[in-house]
Length: 230
Ligand SMILES: Nc1ncnc2c1ncn2[C@@H]1O[C@H](COP(=O)(O)OP(=O)(O)O)[C@@H](O)[C@H]1O
Ligand SMILES: [Mg+2]
Image (tube, rainbow, N blue to C red; front, top):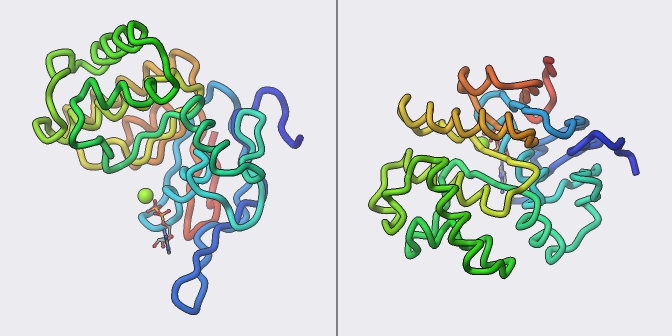
């Protein structure tokens, strides 16, 4: 194992290539980073620089073309889709830029979904939904559908859903990118709380308020690590 005990994420020489038509484009080149448990990391860099691709690879949603990715002591590049689905559900909270809520489920049902997947007891699920809605300030929206909420509110529900199974690692892809200042602040407060709880948080963002929380900042440029600031 290449990982030492206090690392949550270690990528080694990660490369990602996409086949486009008859050609290939390399979107990540030689990404080697190490993220300690409990640290708050910001991924920066212009649009198209590879932030989403890297987050997806760290979260086990996508695989690198070359290199290795260790998360919580597991080499994700060695695992099959069943393992990865289980791993994501138990250990990773993913917040997507486009919220990705299930439109036919209510707020409460969306949050319940990852817990039901793990067949948690109904009473535990109910309690967790109540706690999470309180945390994101949406208690009064429990029985609403996503289409009845603003973008900012949907993003807060997406956070609640990502946290349902109390993951050790939270990945958020430009979580405030589409939000007004008020909603962005609420998301930043949730991120602050996760930092205070000692979670490992990796956020791709251009938001200076979120960047202020960072223990470490990685900047990508055309798929390469341009700089790593403490
Ligand atoms: N499925 C795909 N097929 C081909 N190219 C892709 C695919 N997904 C992403 N890309 C390309 O990879 C590059 C990095 O994309 P992305 O990771 O989304 O960057 P960012 O999140 O920093 O904007 C972009 O040039 C994008 O067009
Ligand atoms: Mg992106």
